[in-house]
Image (cartoon, rainbow, N blue to C red):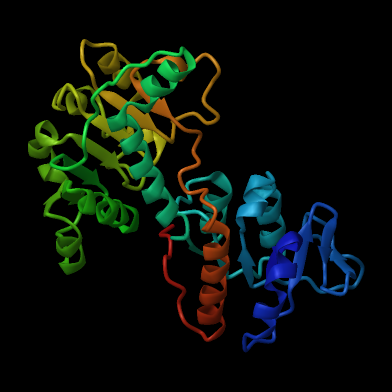
Length: 332
């Protein structure tokens, strides 16, 4: 199995405890080595001398991703043509290297490890906006003692578009505050959805909900159906004081239409963690728009994500080694 060398030290004991005969193959920019330090291949996956290099499973960790090494790692993993399954550390797998794995016929599993943090981040951003923290901070720095009323979550109506794991976790955080949550998903709601929300609609039914929502959360995957979902028509149906939150993918929103809408005479706020171009270009109007609250695609980067990802990888690997099908599979 191929994994980043930096991750092996804290996973070694857990890997050894699994019932398997796979050899850990440790990738770094200096090459691919065995646990004893002997090199068997270059960083590009080309074997050294007579060494055998034939990974069947691979682990794309968050450290690998943040280190900017995803593309090189995937190239090395695919080089021998033996790879059968890869576990990713992210919920979204639309990045080109992940698509490269799917095109090669490799079974790819996404991660649900970021979901708890993404839901918490969503809740924190809505609270930040409802409480008017941007203005509070400005007034404190200016030495202004003003007692400005703020908006409560209790009694607000939330439309959560994309009611998978993240959407349900957002609902689980918002409802105890007294919010009414309506979930929207492509397929007919199941029992789990009906327990997690106050009401459910299909994607075809969201038009009726848009004018009613105080908060609209985009937590849907990026598909042909959702690309550009939030366009001028969608935005024109929203309340003038709505809080629109995007923690899904930037391309779900038509940015040009969003900017025109935000420039209108309304008190709406766009809360954005994802963008159609990342990093967001320096000259983008979103940076300084008074009706925008933004973070830099860090919704899932909570302090517990790495350990949850490690747990997921070990569980998924155990399933793979036992001849089963790891969950969270991505369709090619």
